[in-house]
Image (cartoon, rainbow, N blue to C red):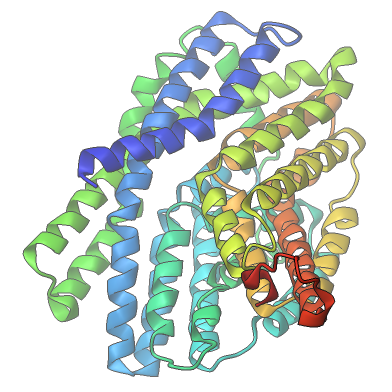
Length: 507
């Protein structure tokens, strides 16, 4: 496919992600939650910028980050040097996470932690756990035992942590493995797994995203023990000031230079690392090298457009709309509205379609793509309903997160390991760009309207989106296993002379 065709394809994916939310917002503002004209125009412009930025970013990332991950992973394995693999993995984990757009959006919304501090803390967490991922692949350590061990530590720390850091910690784990980080990490894992020749090597290449999601949770929880919190309502106050300013639309122009600089600083380590690694080790031919450079340029431009559109128009309207609906009789409608948004968000997420096809192939058709899609949509809709109930009632996230992860870990003891790896990987897939850019600000707006605590009640929305696939996909894996065992118990004599036997099912 040509470059032009690939860009058009990514634009279509981007439109499918943004359009459902835009349509739902339009229905709300023209019926029960009217907003000012200038805010609506800013949102419309933000939608356009989001579509263009996300499309260019996904195209650029696919032609740069994924390729760089493959090249570096393959080169590291050829060296057969354990310390080199671990050192590069740690460094790469930090560098690539700093440039993650979903993390930047979340950090901008967190009011009590400095954005730079939060991004650096999360990046170190990812770097350390990417190092552990390499050890797991090289020494064939089973994923489920690592998950049980580290989530056990997480819940022990959670009971001792500052409540203002708990929801943010789990949200950090959800947004970290976004469109920048996840493709790179997966590509790196596939490259390193190629060093092994046993039959479990391919299966062990899954699970990197799962472990890299654990690192930020632990890192932010530990940060809470010694970091002094800042003011608690900065993000909501900023959105309110936008709503009261007639020049909201012009703030786009003022924001562009700011994000040009921020994105340049975020991507500079990635570009510098690639250029140095290529000069010292890769020595790529001219055409592959130029392809990556062009991909990095598209990634940069797309990321700038994406962040400007998100921070100026998209997230701001989410807060304002949430405030409007959170006042008066419409408050009760926020639960079904949030669930509806959750259904369409996961349905429109491009990476989810890749995941559902993968599960269908692994289960030999026992779990169909359609059944998987419906199950995920229902699970995320349910998670969003629970999230809004938390906002309206002040219910602690512990009452949802602890039982949810407990169920997920118990299921891991009964399903094939490959389903556990894919399930925990899929948490980062489901919590895509829309979760941090719109759903979290929407929850913050409702929380502010009802007088709740934004840090403990609104944050945690992304965490619930990331948690539900862990349960859903493993249940699907359990169904697949039961069906396979059932088919094995059927002998040829059980069929009549005129029965049609589908051999692929018996196998």
